[in-house]
Image 1 (cartoon, rainbow, N blue to C red):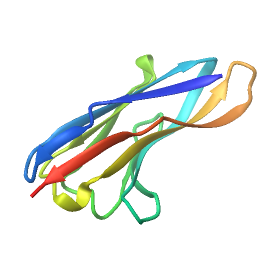
Image 2 (image 1 turned 45 degrees about the vertical axis):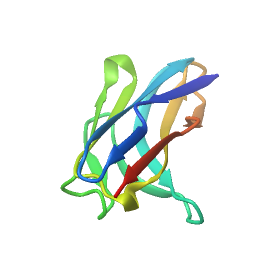
Image 3 (image 1 turned 30 degrees about the horizontal axis):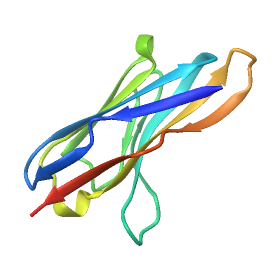
Length: 120
């Protein structure tokens, strides 16, 4: 059993910043890729950014230059620093992790999501 718990969402004005955190816990042997996805009302879920255990990163075009993903492997935690936020960044942000459990089973794990609202 693996749990992902997100925090850090909220309401912010355009141009502001937020930092999201996602901590993984449970029967974890290792985590390969951790990432952040978002889903706005009426739209499909999309990748925002992801990061490997070796800290290689990948960003959506909409996030490049404004968002920074990082992780603390010792804490099984991934972060998303979001700067220069725009109203179009408003969405539910969810954390994802490719977890190898202690039983050597690969589990695609998701958090419950955290709301980010950017006002104009």
